[in-house]
Length: 171
Image (cartoon, helix red, strand yellow):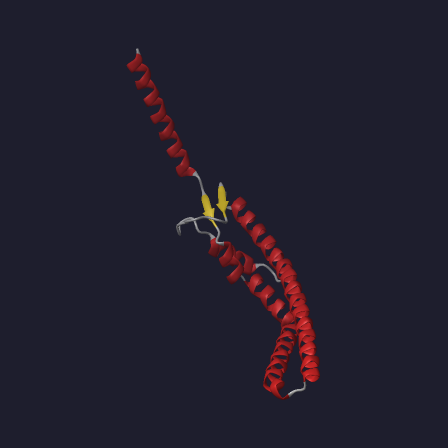
C-alpha cells in the first residue's frame, strides 16, 4: 500500500511539473534596460540638452567664482610673508567670507540642478512606462521586467521601447 502511494504521488508530481513546464513555455516575457532607454532615447537626450542649456550660465558663474576664490587664496599665500598682521587677518576673513558665499552658491546650484533633473527624468520615465504598457498590451506579454540580473537578447525589448519613444512627437 505504501509503495502505490509513493508511486502515485511521484506520478502526480511529474504530471504537475510537465504541465507547469508546458505552461511556462507559453509565457511571453520581456525585459527593458531602463538605463539604456534613459541614455539613448530622443526624449531623454532632449531633456539632457534642455537641462544643459538651462543651467550652463549658472554652472559657468559658479566655476568663475571658484577660480576667483582660488586666485585670491594663491595671492594671499604669496603675499602673506610680507603683509602686516592686521592686513593678513583682514584678507583671510575676506577669503573665508568669499568661500562661504561660494559654498552657498554651489550648494544652491546643485540642489536646483538635482531637482530639475528629477523632474525631467520623471517625465521621460512616465512616457517610457506608457510605451512599455502599450507594447505589453498590443503584443500580449505576460510579464515585462525593468530590472534583472541577467536577460538574454531573446527577451530584451529595449530597442523596441527606444524606437517607440523616438517615434512619439516631442513634448
